[in-house]
Length: 106
Length: 514
Figure 1 (cartoon, chains in turn cyan, green):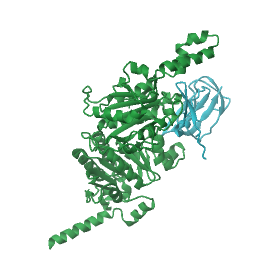
Figure 2 (cartoon, each protein chain N blue to C red):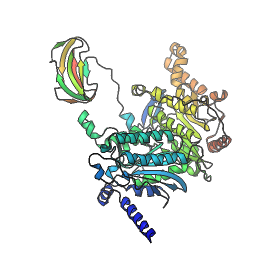
Figure 3 (cartoon, helix red, strand yellow):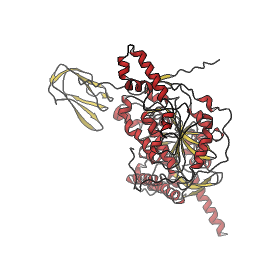
Figure 4 (cartoon, rainbow over the protein chains, first blue to last red):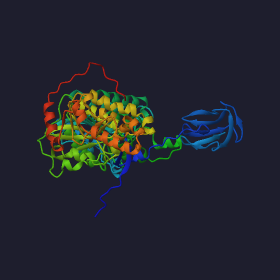
């Protein structure tokens, strides 16, 4: 005989532990993460045109770190606070998707 | 004698146009697994009922050597015919003629048949199979699209508008189907997107196939743009013919009635629903246990399956069903399911179709993704649609009806006409555990054994409030019914609601949370 008990997932809603199936869309949903201010991520997919800083370099708030070209616009990515560029994960010419880690700060 | 010559000349001219883009282009079309535009029209309409208009229309483009090109019918076929003997207007883009590209005259043919459909108050069926705007015609083709969109909007809620996507439908072209009531797609044939894979790859570096970007499955399951999904064109046409039996020809009429047939006897309503509120079941079986001949035409089956919408009949009359589906995501309300149900409710209200709501949901789906995706404004659509609707609105609460979701699912408070509940119904502000923790917080904290006390209090709350009788005591529920009575009570309530008159304040239009 076939297995009569299907493998249900459990979804807790309103303190009910409901046995149910998840949808593909629900399973593929994006999990939220607390943004880390020390990580600079691409806020739009595009191409790294030029990098103005080097690893280990100190930079002031507002200083341009690199140019990210997206949708025909050259976007300046700026230093969010006074600090040091810890590491750079891209080079000029790289195409980056959205939310990709490009620079880490200290 | 000369008449004969004229007739022969006419026939020759027509035969020429009937070739469309010529044998080679037709061969290509067939090789893609597609039917030709005229074959499609014939497959949808009653046999030999189609009359074509504007066969001899020619395009007006004069740039880029276009004046030398002959495009038969300018790449689109328009006309009228019948379905089940009732008149309909139809157009089909002909991909064999310049890729079905849309130029000024092509668009004018479409808008002509649309104007007819609205004036004659008959359904409009549009078959889309087009490479998009005819670039050589520049802004004229954009003007053409705009005129179509305007008419789609004007016809919305007046006549049924059905879009069939049987080929590419890209860029601005997608907005005509998006403005219509029902969109049909076919696996491997339908492709819809605003920006194609090539542009996405160049600009963003994201490599995706046409099918994965905007294929039939994607629009049926992920985006919610399509309402009916099928594996072949033939299956798609059968779906259209089925759907059309459930809907009225325009917003001043009722859908055609059929002889009443009792539900199939092998579906036992009492055996479908588990008493334990955390156990799943398929709500569609409950629907089939109460509809005529156990027939149910589900709409948007794959998108947000946690709510089920579709048409069935009771006592021969078309009913729009909205039902939470415990089988998927416990039947919760979320962004997608609210959006899906709200639009359907508005369709039913526009076309005089009574709405039966079957309720079994624990509440709204928790999650940052939901909150950030706007579950507040999407959820509000459902409240809006139910409140706004003046067709008969009847609710049956099967099991769980908790919190905001209880209000949203056509409660008495949104002015439902009838609200019934099964004895298994649980109508309360929140789940027993959460409620007990708040209401009996002090007792639990001060108890010698808090956990024991907590369980005790949860049980107490459950006993007192997780039932239909508290709501019934306030008159929020009209009657607590036995499951077996569901069909007869609904038929009675529908009968009573037959001449329902309900007014809304006069206004230009409301501002629903789109």
